Image (cartoon, rainbow, N blue to C red; front, top):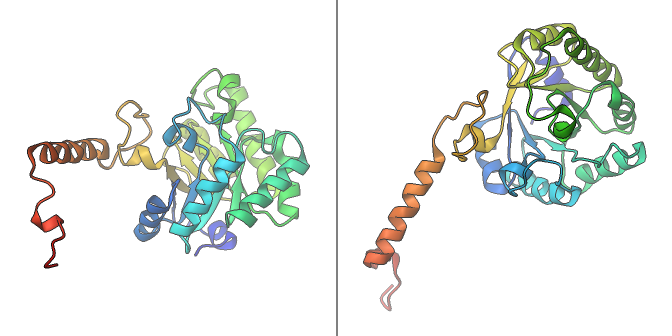
Length: 266
């Protein structure tokens, strides 16, 4: 299993591979495939629970899914995503909820969104022994404030805010930072300006690693295909065809056959 030091030492040497996972079977597949890190993202709200965005996701939901992921990937570095209002309300709440991730679900680290505005929280968590991954750029928990799903870093003020946010997180003790939907040139500048790894999602090829959402990279949602996410297989179509074949065989009396039935003889 990776640890914090090995993750930080990978910068400039080897790209980090991270994927989201939300349950036991997907975590087991991710571990068997050899990914470096699994993020149990609050994106489970959109991908698994059918919410419109990540805001309704609760700590209890995150704990349940993260615990399942840990059981499926017992040798993989796992990060728990701090959901909306689990850390913004107070440092005490942040410490309590981060502690739940580590004690109840067995995470190796937590992730939270924001730059300079959360630096003090990051600092406190790290000092209390909780490794923290930062997250700047498009931050889904701020979707209403940002006015929707918008690429970040297109103007000078946005670029400066992102760079300052990244440096504040580094100084606070974060071991890595997710850059989401940041223009490639700015992501490159951020990556070169800090000593900790950047993990890109929709932020170009210059980051120190990449992360994709499980359902996006497997093509499981035909109604949501973000430009930055490459679907390596159309699992939605494969699954639909399998279910149609099952339905057809049941109605025609083909399934179950003798091969799939028990008899007195065995």
